[in-house]
Length: 543
Image (cartoon, rainbow, N blue to C red; front, side, top):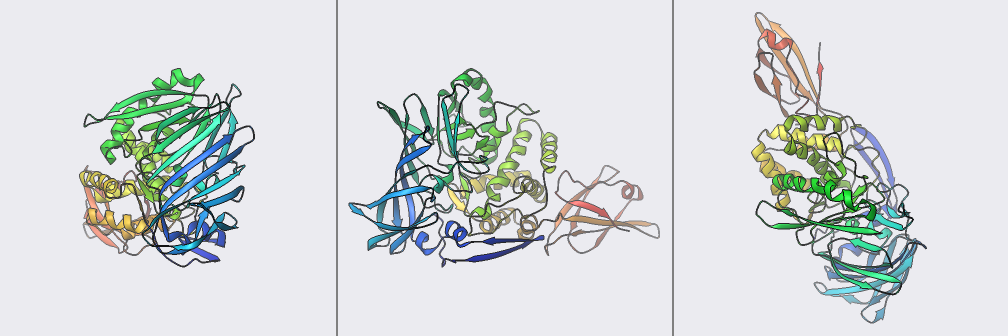
């Protein structure tokens, strides 16, 4: 697991300057939640065993979570996370009850003796209460207590950004994923509970039914989920290129069972496309599942939340199915190490939508799809956020759509599709089931692409302004010249711009911040085209 060590900053004022000035003040609670203080970096979680009883009528949960961990540095005090809306009833270490203090959503646990480095140990936290309710899921996280059209409880939870600690105690930092998780949920008789991974056991009690699920792979805390309702299960399978079989499961409300079978057939060609571009589905033991939810969607690993009400777009597929499924590769297999680096998950996933269109149709259709994404770019704030403060204060969607165009532009810069798609696969292979930070990913792509891409990524990730291709036409005697440069915020920013000429020819201009010139025919100067279909740049003719 990825760990960093630094002293905790009890109060942080952070000024973030990128493109246009942004000012955001962070409290010590942002730092407690978002940083790896010594009280969190001293241990590495390898297994969670979460057990809960859920009462939808009372909107109440009660149970425990056993945290199994490896000691990295000796400690006698650690931090775990649990929202203050939930009560910690007790904390047990073997046969002893431990003392603890709360500071808002942080819980500080005191051991009676120091734990030795490299030892394996565990604690069990017993808790209860009414968890935080989602105001606008999935964008604002929490429990969703709703009912289906028959009046039966229909419950879900989403918590990206807000954190899994809004409903279960954990080390709530994206850099530390448990290697596996066991999830046991008891729900009122007559309802089903669907979660991540595989259903290992179902026990029917007098008033409650218990469902025991097992996740066999590392998983982001926010991807752990539960879904309660009057569910029907649909089983299918996908035969992969190597003839192996991937189990497919769809859980929908009983009334939607008949139409869901045909509707979700779009999953198979989607998986084929994504495996072509990114490599095999990352979690074969757990299978692939879609679960109908009362909110739009979320990339819960092997248990994808689907709530788009069976609506296809003009191209004949459901973008929620495509987008949230792409997160199985970008976000669940390769994960951002910090919330400030979420572009790694969202930019690649949004770009994957366009690649799916290219796979199913052609490159022109993909570019047209990208232009529809481009309409939503605001250029009001940087794509990358600050680190160590659990940053989730983005006001626009540039992390998605501008990030998608950044990657489309990078493909054009590399200008070698064999190399480009090999890089995408190598990222998935090299960082499979790991957490990665922006710098590490940028260095990896630069190395594989054999080009220094630091100025490129700095321009698009850290600045809001669009690079501008500036040009003017000059005539000297009987010769005609195009004078050009790329105006950008980052020194060293360079793009090899392909120009489409009136004669039908194409030339490549290495555009940096210094003016250069190229001799052209007079007709070509009158009607050359800036290829805005290949790059996220604008153009400006100078006098």
